[in-house]
Length: 455
Image (cartoon, rainbow, N blue to C red; front, side):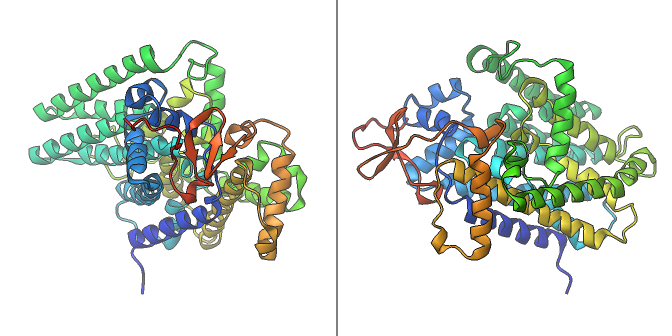
């Protein structure tokens, strides 16, 4: 019996997140996590909004602290599954009449970027931005398709709500929010104009707040405007890294050279990437040039073209921030849609082999990155409890983690300096926060010596 694509996608994405969490459960709270935790157990929401902590992210952390339960991991799980299903739904708007093979659901459900996106409390904001911005893009396409007044009013309201959720999630979504708000002007209805004005006003308020109170955007700073040459680099990085099944933790830190096993993983991943480019890039370019794509009701706007525009504006963060696979995770759903749309028009003889291979190597890349990060946060494996395959991969990645040649992202943060005070694990810089052993052991709480309320 054939399983519906959405059901298969939901099952696979849920399984993958749980598989990733099995390896991620040893990750400790370190680094940028304390930007959020320090505000949560310190100055409250007002301080958080001045420290790059976003409102919805703070709400999730606050709820976790109040419940004494890692609610943020549940949110992470739901975001992962929702983003996978929304990717499939968005694909349906681009190629509505195709019967989708099973490998499409596998690709929609997988990612090589799980380590840097789904298992740090400080990145809940990016997870939410990824989910809400993709939902916003999907509704924007349906808005352009809408014919009657009631449908236009409904879609306008949905766009307004999702735009606000994006803005409250993270500033990386502003490019997509701005683009989708412009689409409201395609329909001359009062509801569309009102929604457009509300979204533009909210964006102005958010940008002004960020400029004066949150982000330093002078040239040379993390959020400073970069030069055009850097834009080119950031564009290439943000397209290649999300699609490449090569673990960035070992490839971009130079640690891959520490083990033949890891060299083999990178070679296989690179081979899959090159094979994909050779097999499907020509088909994608051909599809983008054709004019027989189903129309959205406006002659100049087709689903493929609109997807390209949304992809470009999802890259807006790269104009201001340093190129990062965390920010690149926002582009991945649009890249998947374009990739699959091209692949379904290409020669399908190799599809049943190539796409499952891409799915497996993407998943392996995420697992390697997660293990690398967990080791870097202080996890010390108990090798006597492992099966032989686990011993092999953990020992290889541990060697790579200790022999980094280059500094890259979360995988090269400073040494962890946790201390133990009674039942608490304490970071010396934040002595008022009692940390659990790892993210699977619970949520941080106020140290017994500090009894100020959470605000």
